[in-house]
Length: 463
Image (cartoon, rainbow, N blue to C red; front, side):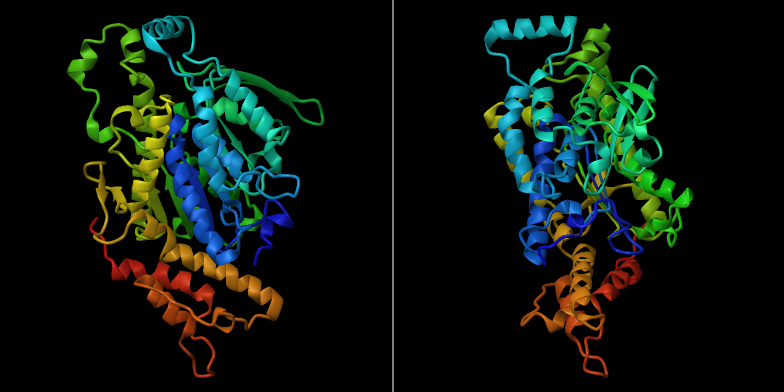
């Protein structure tokens, strides 16, 4: 099972037939370490099922990311010389630990702080040269159209005062969007006051060009989940034959994992009394190690997306399994910063990611707009590896066996032991119970519809 679908072709129709799998990663500077930890765990679980060569790009129809999440997206989907992902998920955390201290060099002592304040008046806090260089070195000349699955990376063009979405879907009909991944990543990461805006140009085969003047995609969509879903829905409305069997508004066909980079929302770092004393614009641009104006824009963007998607999925009665948001709103101190790249703080962020896997699944309370724990038993780690996610993976695994041995092949024919706990026990029974012909009662492809149909009745929700 170590031969993946990505090795034979690049952009394919929905991997799991009538279902569309989407993975998204928020913006957040050095806090990209948090989703890096989550993604490493998820990919390791897929590898246990499908071999060491399994990569996240093999399982998701769309991977989207903003700012630091855009960088992670490019790393997971850019091809190497063997047309496999350039980075495994386990490589992302070491990349951040190695390079963040050089991307965000820290001031030393009083004179360093004075120089930093002086630089803030004249320009961004960091010059971005190291970031630009390392992205060009790692991603080379690879362009958007060459990614191993569909990607969606939001940016904001300050010349046109509008978002620019770099999408694998759009590049097919708008060739000038086929930019180098390094340029896209530099653009989506250009956070105001931290890094300089980024200008570059592209040109299609007919000589038609476009100039981009980009700042951080978090100014438009720090949580790119809605943008990613909309890109797929647009393909359906445009008549893309790959999606002919799916209604554009049928969100029940979407399986979405959205990973945040944490926030200090619960700490309530700002209030009206404090802000009233900030006076000039400079006060909004610097409070300690924070930039309140940027924090407010990006947090509002992320939360509105989570709220909107939660409402949509719940209104369709597909609340428990289609959409998983993994986020920690309890950050405080230096770990809530986007740029304090000391060794201690980076190590602390790794610990935040590890602890987030152990925390209970949360969801948006539609009355208060706050995250609340969901259920009494399921952690984020369990949510990633139980229920509908393994059902999707098992369906893929069985389909590969059927390609080798025919449509009657079932997982029970190949494993001496199948074990499962809790919901995994249910899946185990479904895969191994005999029908009247002494063949498995359920094929793997039947498990996912079972969950989608019955979970809302097993776990009825309060509206």
